[in-house]
Image 1 (cartoon, rainbow, N blue to C red):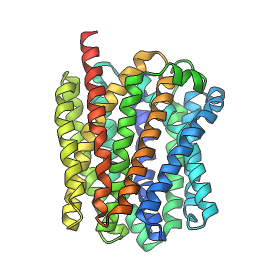
Image 2 (cartoon, one colour):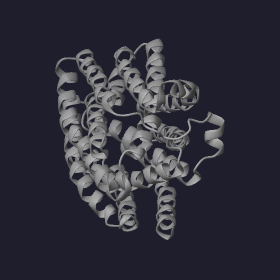
Image 3 (cartoon, helix red, strand yellow):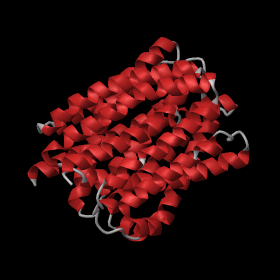
Length: 381
């Protein structure tokens, strides 16, 4: 099978998987807020989910050894599809715990395996363009998905929306069955994976997790509150952000492939800092929050492409892509959990909900240092 066909199959899977996330998963925080949870409580719940995911990942390694990287990606997607049933009943403490456990287990299987497959599929001189296209596909579904999700949640209820999302997640596994077995290196024990970690990769992912706690967890919930807690208006804001992200993804991929990763890194770090400042000051106006969300999505699309070209190249060159991503995802969980707790602390101290994003801005410095050092090492090698 050609690398191009593998790339297309993996991108098709990723687009369907992200569509279910855009249609329902991205509304999970908003859904909990509508149930009556406070912003601080919801962020604390996500911190708990990330902690459970960190532990579940170590417990899932024997299963990954049994079914392989491709099998673990498929199985993880199937378990993630099952999370929507308990989420619909999360107002009851028992179902909330079941949702946290199910979602954490599914993602603990899915993300290290998916990233290992992505790292070993394609790459080289076309890595930036490939990631640009994949993120553009994801960004496109983040235009359509939120519009559909917002309408379904507002007019038909969570059960209909979550059921459709579960079916889409199940369908996303289909393209993976047509891919060949992926050799992503030795599937080590958790102890060995953490002992022989790529420190730069883990630290970069930990910094990314800390930032995403503000940008992907805290900010969407703050935006939902600022926009009046309406699912449809929240979906429209996410759709506009998806369009901005799609356009930015395509541009930056070509820039990176021409050897300008370090230049893009400087620009994106400055833009990230400005994006945090814009979001943090957006409480006063729904329009300001809307614009901050759209511009921030464009910045995140560029940033994610810059970061993941470095991560995937290091994973592929390590000769043990799964082991690399197993440790890196652990770093991401730890960083994101700490970021969610920091945001929850801010939510308890202030009524200005947009300020919950500010603590996560501290991750920019560590991310910049890790990616810059990696780019210079690769250049001299």
